Length: 121
Image (cartoon, rainbow, N blue to C red; front, side, top):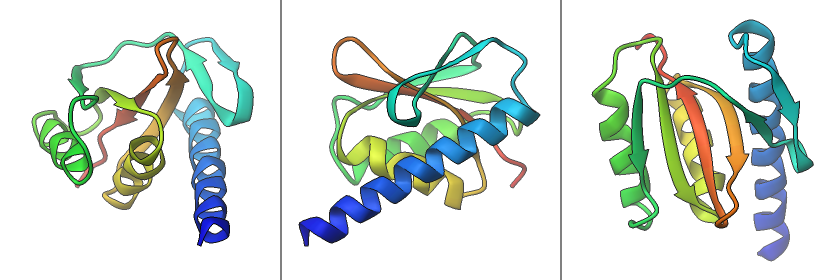
C-alpha cells in the first residue's frame, strides 16, 4: 500500500511540476526560480486568498472549491495549506476541475502556498 501511495505522490509531484512549467511558459511573466523537487517560488499578484490549514480532508477541497466559485475565470486564487494530503490532492483535484496550478511554494512554517488560475468552466 505504501508503495502505491508513494507512486501516486511522485506522480502528483511530477504532474504539478509539469503544470507549473507549462503555466510559466504560457501565462506567467514574473521572474521564476526553481526550487527543490519541482517546487516553484515566485512573486505574483493574486485576486483572492483562502487558508485551509485549519481543516482536514474532505473539507480542504470543499473550502477551496467554494473560494474558486467566488472568483471569475482567469483570476488567481492563492491557497495556503498543510503539507501531506492537501498538497498532494488539491492541485490534482483543481486540474480535474479545469483550473491551472501556476505556482507552488513551500513556506518556512511547513505549510505550502499554491497559486491557481481559474479555468473557463
